[in-house]
Length: 181
Image 1 (tube, rainbow, N blue to C red):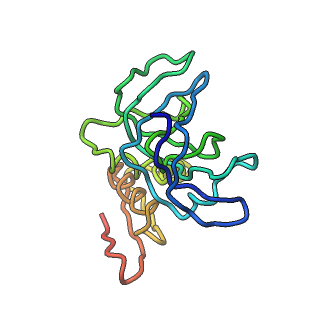
Image 2: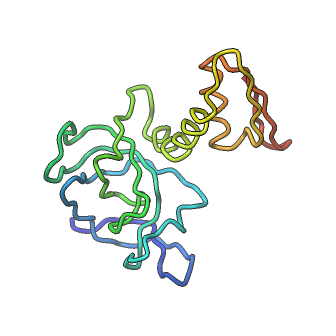
């Protein structure tokens, strides 16, 4: 099997996405091939495309799966390892496919307590949540207000802050179902 199913943007001019038969990505030095088991979905996925992309271009920036093959120069990763990854702006395409070529420095071991779907939902929003909370330099007992607390980033900031003993208040729309911690 040299092809896979993938969700791809069909042209540079159109934002249209279609399911296509695409070649399984080839990996190079410092890359692994991941069999994608779940991918995250964000509004940005159809727009984060390299300038030199060939179309149709497989979209998607985050996912989780198992390592299917390892390129040269890779250590600390084995075939069948469960991983979380990002693929943003890679020429070989993104995560909305059966397989993704992934730079090894974007791999994170999938914790045993998480499903592939849970792991795929974390990379982009999780990084933004960690970086924003760390930038504030808050300590246990400090207070934090989060506007838009029901979104992907806000809901993760709530959990991270609460785990650090930071008092959290937030706002969200009436239909969001957000809770304070």
